[in-house]
Length: 325
Image (cartoon, one colour):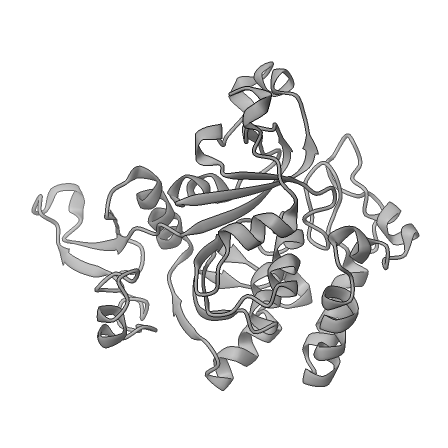
């Protein structure tokens, strides 16, 4: 596609256009790695409500969306931010208070669910979950499922292996596909048409991207197509999957973006303290999310020396000498 078909828009417009109240959304990243935090903060600023959120094993993004009251229901394998919050703090409070609906799957099950969505099939089989309470414990009951056409009728289905005793697998678990209304991922490089490159571990971002009806890509660097096509085997997300491209340097901050910057332990430690107390958390939201109008304004509140400290070493892709305590 030519330059006249550019998909580049600003972040505010992308969220306004593709994330309505009540949308089923998915966010990429893993714990405190490459979460699309600039987009998360913009969702919060726009006071989006009633979101049905999907994530593989996410941390900071999930926790802040839940803490700000944007999420009505969550499907996830694991919600944690490393040693800063082995279980996400606002997530845990919301579950304990009954503020959100919640259903959990294994990591592999969630991977397969996104993969099924990307493949265009209604489910995929696995042995993951057999012998565990994941099979028995449902977060969404059948009546709730029947009243929402976007929810599968069953959490999962266990059935006899239709091939008999072949492969020594008497039972299999069928997990339903996920097809979000919109997925948001953060990448290192993208062009104006949406061709995207993730450096380092992709996690399940590619499957999430391909499973979704709409896709917002935020990127560290907006580059010419020729640069990405010079190494085509390193590009994971094709343009036809992408609806919007948003250039947001430091767009994963305070989580890490491999090869660009590490996670910010100072920010995450302060967040941990603020998130533990309801009053302090309200002040945090005002100071760091509602107060700044853009991600750039949020970054301006961070000590420049701290940003320098988390810049990635070119050789390793991580910050060297960083005090991670």
